[in-house]
Length: 207
Image (tube, rainbow, N blue to C red; front, side, top):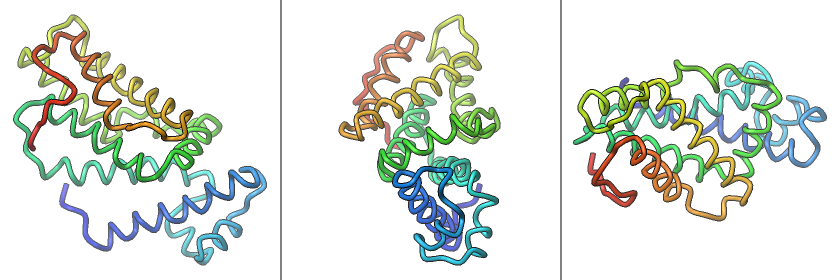
């Protein structure tokens, strides 16, 4: 993947701006009560501009997931890592940093709406994050960095569930703790159970 252009970054920022305005309205008045025109008014954009970025009101949250993954891929694709575990930790760190920047209110609404709409994208194995983590786990198993009887698919699913659960818990606590730090800690505890040795959550990987 080539690095994002300024125009692409601007488009991502615009999508987040629109979705943040939508989230605020959903919290105040309820999802069903809000129309696209209400979102446009709050975000200061035209209806045409809204549909340039989103297919519908329902697609706001699926698009949010996609934009987060685009930002992660943009960074990961240009970095070199000394070990697969360093790459895995960087993926988790980047995801946590983006989620923290968006805030617990926004992410809470993303989770809530995904439970309602049952977005297929959220569970897709074709998502960049899933593919990248799976590739890292395959390498770690092949190189003997992880030593266990589970398959790469099983371990990848577990990591995704762990991270999803940590983010959910972080939202329950209104974002009052360091998401990146706790994501690292709990992931490293899990990886040690998968046979990873001589590693601590505060290990510094320099990509």
